[in-house]
Image 1 (cartoon, rainbow over the protein chains, first blue to last red):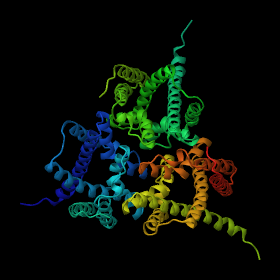
Image 2: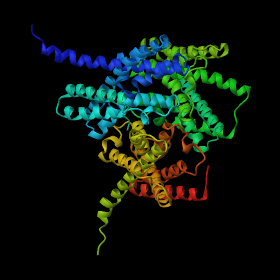
Image 3: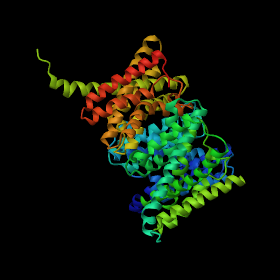
Image 4: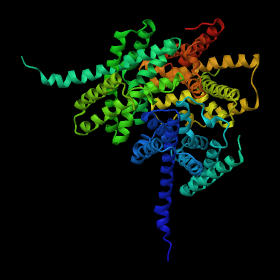
Length: 209
Length: 209
Length: 209
């Protein structure tokens, strides 16, 4: 039996990145909703925190890139997926060991994916390496940062947690040379591996900056 | 005597929407100034809080739509009207039953108007229904949200108050089908009626989500 | 010996404005880092606070002007200079009389420079006088404002300090007529003199609004 390599390249690989991206939107929507529940917000608060958590980083990136309205508004899947996350968090109280582990792994994969995608968009807009890293990190951690500020907390990413933004920086550093060499998709996969791996190891070993 | 229907359609109706829009800018300028007074800010604080309260929602919408600088900067009336509101709040301490009632009714009408205008702009930029609702609600409640965050409070719109953002959602839901059917102005009027009505009834009956 | 006036006009004067601009980015990067140190943030917090302090005002201005990505991202010097400031604040604890005086004078010059440059960009984008003042003040004080909000403080610029945003307003008022008369560079220099002078005198005499 032949493995249809063309199909793999044309469909499965970009499709799996797309799926991971939407998983990220969903997970961060759930996280926003969970924080809304803790703060005893109403449905409006659930919706806004889910949108900010899930889409804030990408919206910030696209607003800075100034190449038309944010993908979060033009792609019909994003808002719906974020709001579905909010609804799930509203109905179910997600907690326990199984959920925490799933969330941790999912969130780490998404961190690398978003950092790589953000850095790639910056390179495609002809920005330099440093701005590309900044926009990659912004895509990955910007939504959580805005959410923390909006509920009156100093962003967790500023200190005291294990390597999170730093993992996003490394994901960008992996992507950039591969992207410049024309290996966009391979670069994103490598960045996800490095970003997620570093983030998970740092959490287990309690590595901090 | 003939009622000049043409004049009504060409002048009075768009003119009255424009007036309501500026009334909204003024009222929210006053509200920003009133909050600045409560926090014992100086004139700079009055001006910034008035601008943020009155124009922040529209600025956020226009920044996301990316079709040129925000109307708040290109329309010569907006900034002046917001600053006039700040000045009034600086000179006069607005309080008492009469002011509260006037404010309540004015603010409810403006809520519907801004939600409808924001959603309409999104549709004209070829965005879908969900993004149009988001941008409508952003126009209506975004300025107050940013203002609350800037003075160190969790945005009131997140929970505990009567249907406010929800009224803006309903105003958008009324506008969108009418706008798609080519009835832009009628849609805005209908949205104002529904948004203001729901907001006032919710306040009186203490409806919350 | 001849003084080569052409060289002065073509090279030295624009060059010195550029240098002052980068000095401003560096000083505000250091300031952001110093605040990160006080809050016990990690290196990520140092970097983000430095970038927000040093580049936030210009980024906000460019995002509102919507004429392409912010200069902070397209000019290769800005991000590096801000991060160098963060690194200096991370390594050295800058304090004492000499540093405070240097900082005060530098910051006052930069205040006038940024206000004038911001107002000039707004005029070049065909905005009116009031929006030009708003964008000038935003360029000068916007970064500090966002930084204060992000670390959970009410922005210092809202009240209780000596004339700071007000000095920026006066710098804009000096620039605008000169800019409209075609004297862009002279206008910036005059604005720096007035802005810095007013800011320093106000601090010494404890003038407040």
